Amino acid sequence: MTVKDRFLDLAPWGIAALLIAGVVHIVSILLMPSVATRDAYARLVAVARAAETTSGGIALLAPLAPGAETLPFEDPAMAEGVCVFDLAKGLLRVRGGADGEDLLGLSFHAGGRVFHSMTDRSAIKGKIDIVVGDAGQIEAVEGDDAGAAPVQEVRITAPSRRGFVLIRSFAKRPSDQDRARQRIRAMSCEVFQPPEE
Amino acid sequence: MFAIADPRAAWSVLRGATKARRAAPLREPFVRYARAFAAMMAGLALGFLATAVSIHSGYGFNALRVGPWTAWPQTGAVDIDPYARAVLARSGEAPLGRDQGLVFVARVDSAGAPLVGRCEYRVTAPVPAARFWTLGLASPAGALLPNPTGRYAYASRDILRREGGGFDIAISRVARPGNWLSPGEARDVVLVLRLYETALDLEARHDPASFPNIVKLACP
Image (cartoon, rainbow over all chains, first blue to last red; front, side, top):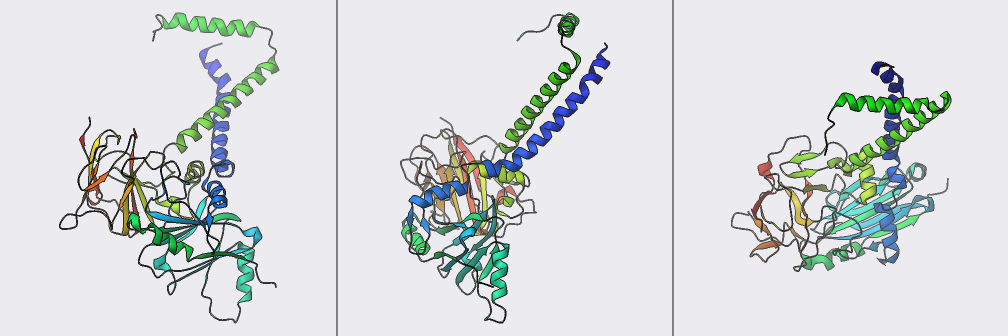
């Protein structure tokens, strides 16, 4: 058996190995978000249960400290609150005022991606009023307001049912942390049912 | 390390070994099964290796690099690529939304040498235009560094500035006058620059001179 024969003999197996490697690589990358047990959602669900919950239904995260971070790469200058949602229980409405001079940011996360984000600058008339639902729920809400008063709220379709809204309130000096947390206390997250047909 | 004295001799030994194995009473279908199994195992190993390598080298594609600073703008967008999603799912980060701002991380200084906790650095202005910014130290995994000062970052509003608006930040284990960040006892550090509400053009090539400069001063 010559070297060439041997090569021709083994080449198909080598190609098969490479094809399998490609499939394994793509599948493992695509499945990673659904098998990861310590992603931001899982961490926040665990923390939100133990954290102080405001009257508006927002879990206030403890100020960042070494060894006590909930999420990596968060800004220590931010006070943070989180609303974990499950659209199976109803739509989520996030409301708040946006008249402060410091930055207030909302990011909406579901299915491993940020599906909406905004800051106080993009609030309409100084008010934040955002409704999150799945495609069917948003459709039901939109079908309900035919002929009614102009819509004030922003409606967003979430890519998956479970997710969270992270509210970041900027404290421009370390001594402003309390005021930044106060701004989160003034906001609210509530679950409501879509209107009946 | 050793070198094979005579490659031809080594080859004949190898061939002899294969021949000996072939001579063993392993019938035809079993040889094929063994090969299929080997191909599958090699494929699995290669595939997982490729996954491990790709998730340890940044957040997918389309990095924005300016001098030592790197940002991954699409981690905060809806059209995030699967690689970035995989990395975020593993690290547990909740990235800033694209409309909120950009996070730049520097793992090296302006000369390209890795940032280490025992060295002293000076970080100097400018910072690209943004409504607010913060500049702080973190571990390579994104944790805060325990240090005696209890300060982890400076914000655009609470930093001490020189006349004209410029500033510099000293990074050192020992106390320094002015703006001072301590890495504590950390071995490796990264600098994190967060620009909130910035109008930075993501498609353009930016001049490193418009970003903070990181100069190594001394390495005891």
